[in-house]
Structure formats: structure tokens, C-alpha cells
Image 1 (cartoon, rainbow, N blue to C red):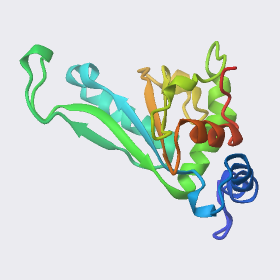
Image 2 (image 1 turned 90 degrees about the vertical axis):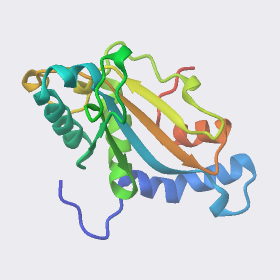
Image 3 (image 1 turned 90 degrees about the horizontal axis):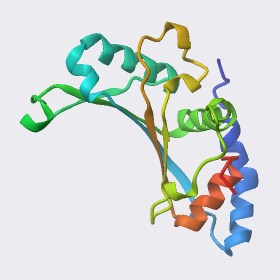
Length: 187
């Protein structure tokens, strides 16, 4: 979808105009720079056992993540051999991508409004995914919940880990920020 050059993503505008004043009021923050903000979103896919059997799996998983994020991911390789895991040095074990700026907000919008409601038996996100700094982690079992992926054309099913890194936040502020963004948390 082509956007005009100066047009901001919808969630970025919502953050600037609605969420910042709400967070300042809720937590008694005087300075706009002290309000919690999303720094980056990281997506990780573990392909350890699958990649040893077939090299095409690495390529297909990389293409899937590229379609989902709109950005080419990095293939991570093992740093050393571990005999107990039948792992050799230099074998692909994962795929990762880090989103910042407009792409991050576009991905966040699709995640909250389209992908999470498509998860089977979805009853809301768990609030236990927060750490002390307010960062939040979500695990998704099937990558086919994203609308960019056609389930029939995909040979493999893989999960992915989504990590949302926040700045100026603790657990309580991070939860409030993500609720204002529309994250469906369990009651």
C-alpha cells in the first residue's frame, strides 16, 4: 500500500495526539520526554531442527518473515558445535528482524487489529509477558495468522516470538501504553 511521503502511520498519530496526554495524566508525568514509548519490535523464529534436514526450509521461513514485516530478515547461525544437540558450527538456527519507525507502527497495527483476532481460541494476551523494564513478549504458534501469508501455499508451519521493547517504562506503565494501543489483554 503506497503512502504519501509526509503521512505518518495511524498508530503513531494516535500515540502523539491521544496516548501521550492520557499517560501524562494517569502517571502524573510532567515532561513529554518521560512518557513510555515503543523503541523497537523484534521478531524471532527458531528453525534449528528443521534447517538441518532441508535448506529450502530456511529460505521459505525467511520469505515468510519478509512478507510479514516488509523487511528482509537476518539468518542467525550457530557459533559453535554442540554434540549433544547434533549441532554443527555455521548451521542456520534462527531468523530475526528488528523493526523501528514507521514499519514498526504499521506492523503493530496489523498485529493488534488483524492477526491476533485470527488466532485460534484467542481469549486475550497474558499480562505475564512483561519484564521489569516494561518490555513485552508474545509467542505465536502459527505464522499463518498474518494476512500476508496464504496457508495453502506454505509447506511448513512455524511459530514466532515478538518482543516489544519500551523506553521509560516499568511493568505498570508498559501495560497502560499497550492497552491504549489496543492490545487485547485478558481480564
